[in-house]
Image (tube, rainbow, N blue to C red; front, side, top):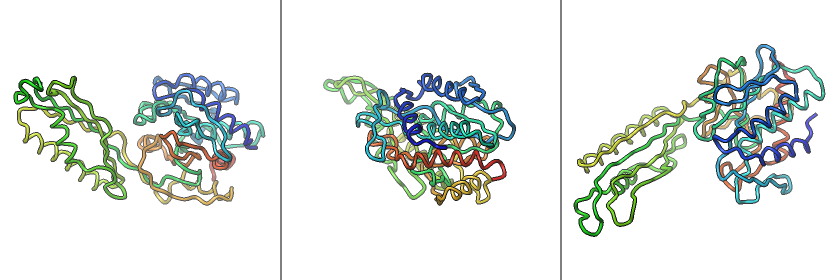
Length: 362
């Protein structure tokens, strides 16, 4: 039986363990101890991802990530009615420890009740928040499951991610020419000025229902009294529509080339890289059918929703695993206003438990 008090305590205990991206060892150690106590066999791949299973064939993969974004150190979770919140100086860490806690509670429940359940494989990844890095380095030769449910969506577990975008990251580096800003500025070529020309020509924000473009960081210059020789910018664009993505890509290249012609004595270098490929659930996706069946058995109605974000589910699907991403009760992700809705958290644990009890037949 799902135990609400235990679930809330488990989440809060996990939230208190600092685990910003790249620093997941402490929370991994805690999770390994909890999984071992449930009788699961534990493995870690060479990248530090945690993989656990009961050793049976054709397991259902239950997955979430261990890392959190900043500011995520010294989190102090507290109850506020039917919500769990932070003290307002940090994130809460519901993304993705609400997902982790839900999986652990479901495993604890079926273990205590000693009920027959589907074979299970648990995958807790590192460094999801900085570009799905843990999943991209996951040793898939150690994974035996062919279906995965990823607890990493915003909102209640009834929210199923129907599609997610392809994500392209970029960096632009400009080398101009330094000069004394007060004595001979005409001899300089301002790298910051060039970066500014590029940025103001780029689209910004939401371009359409499926496409976004963002400038994330800008760096440049050394001191106030020198024409800056170096500057750089990093950003991203993403879309669920490949035609739109290609259009933004072309606009990006044309913009950079236009500014390059304006400043022929400067060096402008651009680098683009696809962080992950988008995905869309097919109507007959077997894992989606399994999730919707489980939700309805619990009296919950599934809602298919497109997402502008990526998750480890994108990487699982790229590697041939039928992965479905569901909500985990978290709201206002990546902000100090983040909160977890306790009834939704309980529903996420119930969903996970029902998926296990359901067996492979659905």
